Length: 113
Length: 112
Image (tube, rainbow over all chains, first blue to last red; front, side, top):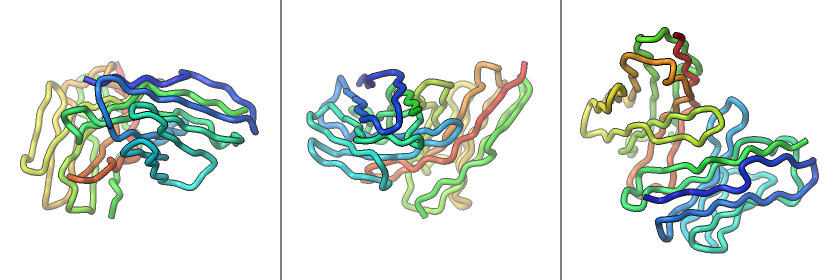
């Protein structure tokens, strides 16, 4: 089965600073990859998904961008963070042999101060 | 039409009770309905899933009931325990879709 790694686990950044969150996946190849954000006590908001290297679909217009430089690497970035960017960021991908089953990484807790 | 509506938003049940969380959908193309369990500070974990060719699926103390004609599905937790206290999300997808559509989540508390 695949393993999803996210880095860092927690992050505190000032408003206006840049952001880079990394997601890497082991045990699968050419997976669909997803970035979700979860505000405190709220649901899961799909931000971006990617079906392959360099292919990014954005779900909501916002202050964030995503890139997929390698098959199993998905990066979430921002040039200037806003207070509203605070939240729990989750990377996800389907099971290798069961594409319907989506699995989530451990998440990154971002606090913008 | 892509929405999945989940209720209630929060639920408190005594230990041993049977909490029921409901979800409704509009898109009849959906053919996969998973439930996720999320503990504080953790990513959601796939709990149980059902396809519309069956009306019920059980895994341990967790049961999904599915009503295709009503376009509704629900999660039941038998003999609930304090350790089941978590946020639960329903979701839906269909073959060829690139993503899951999630419900808004239910915060479940099981009191001892």
